Amino acid sequence: MKRTFLLLLMTLTALVARAQTLEECCGLAQEHYPEIRQYDLIAETEQYNISNAARAWIPQVVLSGQATYQSATPTYPEAFNQMIAANGLDMSGIRKDQYKVAIDVSQNIWDGGQSRANREIAEAEAAVERSRVDVSLYDLQSRIQNLYFGILLLDERVAQTETLIEVLDANLNRMRTYYRNGVAMQSDVDAVEAELLTACQTLSQVEASRASYRRMLEVFIGQPLTDKTLTRPAMVDVASRTSARPELAMFEAQSDKLAAQRKAIDASVMPRFSAFAQGYYGYPGLDMFKSMVSSEWTLNAIVGVRMSWNIGAFYTKKNNISKLDAAERQIAVQRDVFLFNTEMQTTQDDGEIARLRSAIEDDNRIVELRRSVRMAAESRLENGVIDATDLLRKIADETTATLNRSTHEIELLQAIYRLRTTLNQ
Image 1 (cartoon, rainbow, N blue to C red):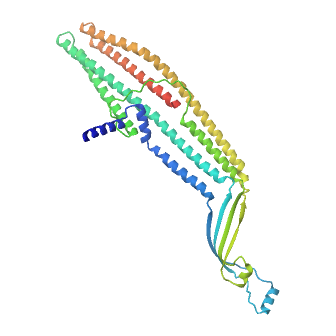
Image 2 (cartoon, rainbow, N blue to C red):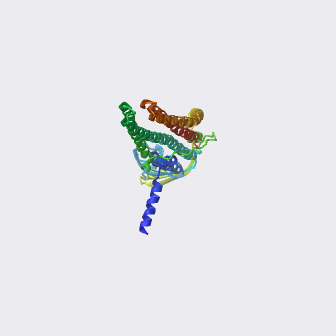
Image 3 (cartoon, rainbow, N blue to C red):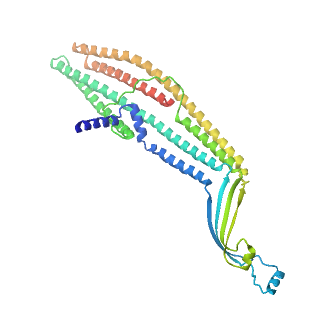
């Protein structure tokens, strides 16, 4: 039972870790790419900013203390001082040294919509940052596709080179037999062997390039590629031409941010109303006459409603609105440029797809003819009609035709998936 469970666990792990298709590689690359951690940081920052905006409605408390010495203080008129002195009273007036420990509490009643505008700005800024990450991760797909199809092209070159080596090896053995029987010369054997060695050398170089591409792809997806060759993507059609790129969402988020900033400007010229309470312990108190008689510290308090209006905000409102209008026009220009470039890329991809489809139709017939010519050349060589140089030329022609067909097929797939990426389909 335990062994069965372990086998099942290993199988599931292998399935989970499998990354052999283009879709799997793109998905793993996005999960492994470091920038994906930006989403959590953006959400965390957004919550802090929204919390700060909401704290504008929390009562504001200010503690203060002061000690002062004044050059003059309120005093009684001279005639009044004489009357007090005649009655034997001592009312010296307010002392010049004064002390106060105070607490001020204020509560917003209406802030002109500033706190709501700040909240919307925080949300809009977070949406812009998230859309920027979306664009970055979407651009990652193109990089993965280029690597993936580059590996497929190298896979085909490896396969075709291996086939060429098999053909050359078979013809080398045949040529050596002809030489031993006196039908061929040593130069013919040497020519085929040299071509075989060249093909083996080419195979080593192509395999090294493929290994380098595979290592780069493994770095992107964060895990090793399990199979020797990657799975060729399925041929799909791209019928719709409607683009849903994340860049368009980013432009929309930027416009929303400008709208939130516009509300903040409107709120900046509105009056503010708040309730307040002030209390302090010190000397002199609010009862000035009592403080003139006694220098004792007393408790004092004031409550009320306050209105404040920053008229200076009107001075810059027009310019600030004009700056936002200019920024909105810049976004519109960037959107138009993006749509123009997308249309150009779509047109280019459509033309490339049509060209490659036509080329592949011809490639099938060319490969068939080149293979027939090569097989005929092998037969003619056996009968002594042609030499090894002519045979090698026919083999090279067949190899080139086969490689061209495979290359065109992969390039067609790459163009189709590039078009899908351009249109976000």
